[in-house]
Image: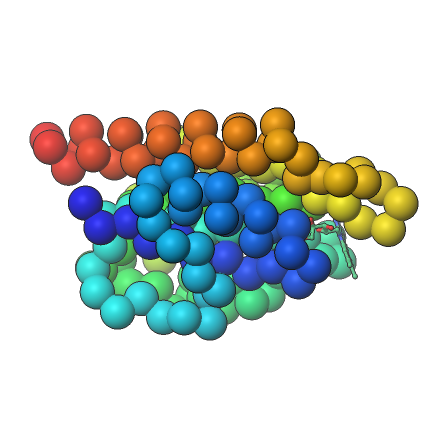
Length: 144
Ligand SMILES: Cc1cc2nc3c(=O)[nH]c(=O)nc-3n(C[C@H](O)[C@H](O)[C@H](O)COP(=O)(O)O)c2cc1C
């Protein structure tokens, strides 16, 4: 099963989560400026919230994805206030006809004086567990 991980992270919070996700499934976490070069069974996508909405760089990446080469996507995110920013990414993926995993992951990310030290070890363990669950689901689906 071909698994790819793409993220966009300005201050490094989502990057930490992306690396925990990638380690858990034996993949490499790459910035979303790196295009997909071959068909993907499961694409993990991570981003954060700026000005109340999902970061525009991740939105742009989603907008150029092709449902014929991305079988399924699973979303993770960090934010300081917004509770479920991954829902915005999932909506954009569905608009492009890309099936979305039933698993997603969100945790707090440090911002100014808020959420110091987040994501922390517990967050990263949760991210790894999410990655394994999403990969298991994709594999079961691929096996028919
Ligand atoms: C300029 C700026 C604007 C932000 N706006 C929001 C926001 O509107 N809502 C929110 O929940 N978090 C907001 N945040 C917090 C970030 O989403 C949070 O710190 C996130 O973990 C950053 O992830 P990153 O380092 O991967 O980019 C903002 C952070 C910055 C620096």
